[in-house]
Length: 145
Ligand code: FES
Image (cartoon, rainbow, N blue to C red; front, side):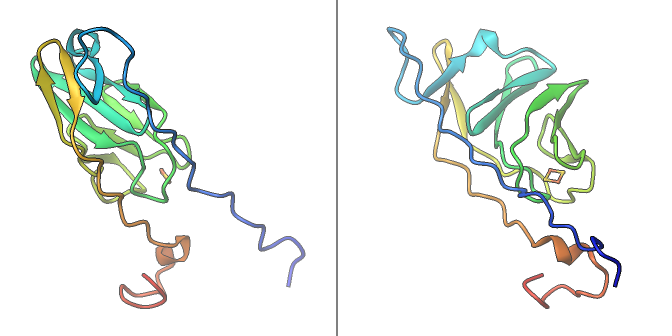
C-alpha cells in the first residue's frame, strides 16, 4: 500500500443558516426578498433557499443543498446555479446543467405576495448518497447506494 493513498475526503455537507425574515414594515411573514430584487434570467441565494426568475414573473425556489454530495450552492452566474465543491451546475429551473450531480435541486415553494417573494414550506432535503456510490462496483441498493 502506498502511504497517503487514502487521504480523507473533505466534509461535503455544509451547514446552512436559516435566513431571517426581512425586518421591513409591510413584509409578509416568511418574506424572502422583494420580487423586484430578483434579477430576470438569474436569481439570488437567500440563506437556505435559492430564488430564481428564469423569465419575467416566473419565480422558482429551491433548496440550497447540492444534490451531489450536499454542499451549499454559493453562486448564480452565467445562467446557472453553481456548486463550489465539485463543479456541478444547475439551470435556473433546478435541472442539472453539468454534473457530477445527476438529480435536480429540491424544490421549495415560493409565491408572490404583493411586492414580495414569500417562502412556503421548507424544501425536502435531497437524498445524498455516500461518495462510494460513484464507484462502479457498488450497485444501486448495495452499501447504502
Ligand atoms: S457537492 Fe456539489 S458538486 Fe459535489
